[in-house]
Length: 171
Ligand code: AR6
Image (cartoon, rainbow, N blue to C red):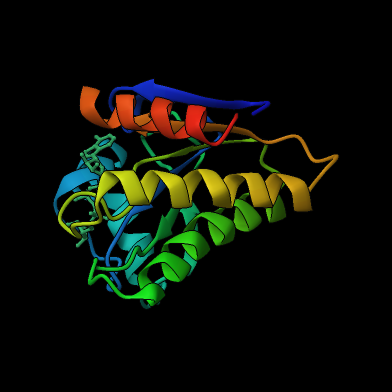
């Protein structure tokens, strides 16, 4: 798919204009990628998050990036995997709403971690398919708007899964 890349590494080092955080509904920080982003951005990020008042599952909120290279952080809350159909719908919405928010702010590059695949337990095979399908759908709905999208993977296993998913879906 044009402008879509899979990268292995730490998303806090991304040179995209915005990076996406796998947050929880409080937006007050946590472990995993959330902890890494807050550490790298510095305490001002938490201060701004406190003023937002949380975020529902599937939705997205934007803040400045502070000490990060990225100018903005888009905080989205993935579903805790339960095996129900609603999980897939909510996870897809995380990607779509994050991309909409980036576009609303005139941004043209975004880096996603593998939302919900850590503490929230989403199986990587399913989660990568939802991520890739959502991005494809968004690109189809936003033809003419250039958006560079990086899928950041923190493990070689996740990297291999994204490559396989992209291959299986003919991108
Ligand atoms: N860069 C890129 N990916 C990362 C990084 C990093 N620095 N660190 C971890 N990952 P998780 P979730 C990957 O658990 O499942 C938090 O406590 C990781 O390997 O961070 O959506 C929040 O506050 C995995 O593939 O997020 C919530 O409470 C992916 O990022 C909860 O965890 C997501 O793992 C959210 O759980």
